[in-house]
Image 1 (cartoon, rainbow over the protein chains, first blue to last red):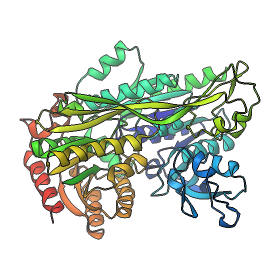
Image 2: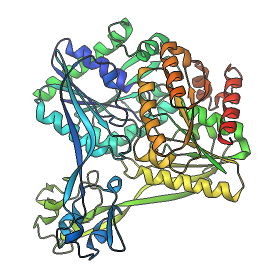
Image 3: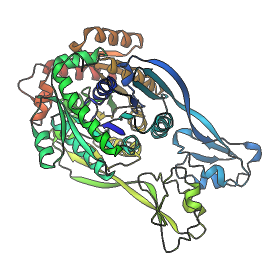
Image 4: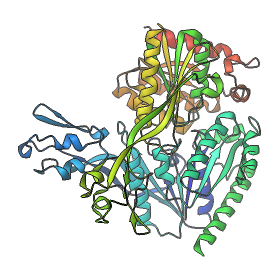
Length: 288
Length: 292
């Protein structure tokens, strides 16, 4: 069972929800939390766990072998991303632009562009009781988050059974990294805040989830601030509101020091319990 | 003409609210570029007129002509993205997985595959409520190439600023450290980092500043919601000092940002706010720093 926690707008509380929900679920069953916001992974700041395993993650890029090259120019012609350029008697490769499609490498008549691994980030696997926590971190200067997100999901799939509840903390936005992080999800929780920015970006996120044909529900964070346009909109569109987490300076203070909230704030606990029940119900339905 | 880019690493620190306030204070003297094309919100505060709009094409999508397809499977074999599954006995392209590399079309023995240009978004040039100009965009759902649309928005803003002799371009960036952020800061004269005193805020500030350093751009920092956690605020100040980043200002946690937004205003236009002076001073500080 894969649950993705996403939002259009950044800073609405994805990480707060992911970490608190995962820890709450871990009180009673095994759960995997995976931080897919590889550009700015924050979940680990809230989770105390033991590091079990760490591995570098690579993407494949072509490497020019001068001796074999006949300067025929095919590699440059076939690269749609302008990542391979012929400059005089040299072939230049721009790793940031490369999408690892292998076309230049495999269509080179003299095998002068073998694919080699280039490090793009690090994956870490932690454990604490029932909770397994997987975090990937993109190296600074690497521009493409998608390959690292894909490899992180693959790691989770290879290491944990389908029956375990998996929570994915997705990156903000609506473009390619979000698609990668949510495309395998059985259910998506969209976290928003009841403000004009929150509503506007929620609409974009919903459009994206509809395009992906995902089932989704909305969690309203900082409930009480702003206005009730988000609630009205969800009612009109018949989208389930899974929880309303109150706007409370105390929550912001706990979060700011890296503390979990569900065990210190009864109302938050109550709201998360209802999300937990919703997840357990979905899990039972999917097991049938 | 000087280009100021506002970024944060972490989302939700107040980037857009602060950028929009600067845009109002700058008035006619600035061109505004909303480069958070993925979740663009600044138009909600700036009342743009969407006077000029253009489609944005970037990247390609493979399309298979089933009449010419002989089901040899070569296309699926070379596709590294698993984007050509067999559905009901036919090879079809999964648009969301296809990266538009064109490899499949090159190996198809019957030329059954063509690549079509993708319309991935729209961009706009608007007059906003200050009388100034704003360039903004909307990325299509699930689209790739947000970095390229960011570059487009910025270039348009630059051309307009050059043609009209505007003093500043103010750019609202996106969260993260990936391609849209790289696009938004490349070529900038000054970076304003908006952070908040939380463990995440500081963590993300450090990562995004590593990126800024690679571009060798001068930076200043606004600590928003500074009184939420005085200890972390202190740590941020130490980090700024160590890295020689100008501490532009610290703003208190104040819900008038949200109240103002709810009525479509920036905080500097909102009567009931106590932050006005701090934001005016921040904007003056940014101008001093950029011109030194």
